[in-house]
Image 1 (cartoon, rainbow, N blue to C red):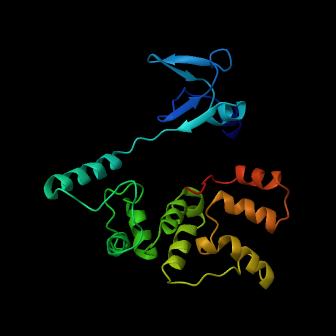
Image 2: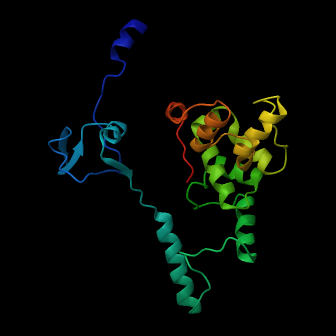
Image 3: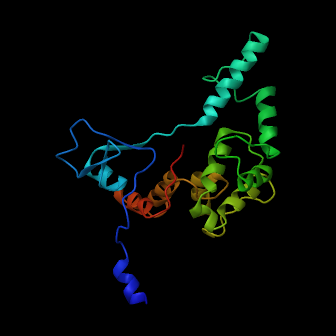
Length: 226
């Protein structure tokens, strides 16, 4: 059975289209890459990574209903009260209003909040009780298949919430190396969450050259810092 299945490995079953993938090029793509018409729209026959390696810029353009809801809420308040000290383009991250927002998220009251409304996310919020955008970035990065398969999401949340202490014993027993690793991972509670951290560790600890850390990152689950 395995022998027969191996023959089918890598075979394309049917073409697909990335729902928000857009290819940007300063040249006509038709003579450069294989193209086809799908419902009157030109799409490439290559996968996104192959397009990016070839040269054109591949972007994911997302449309978020959440932004419309926030804008509608602001308009409703303006219609009711006439004025409001609230600017969507200049949000304040401190003060009583910000503290109330962090408290709200720390209670797990995140229904309708983009990327934070699932049950698993609410559990992490109540454990970690984030108090900054850096905390939220780390939380979202931790809640991905790679870190979750290694239990990193709960480890980060326990440390961020002060339930357990940050330790580097699992990475090194040498105090000097631990200090070096801490300089890279201190911002994420000693847990590797971002590609940039792997690259910095590769250069500082592994003594890799400029290309080797990038190769290591390419083989790892992808999550860049927002």
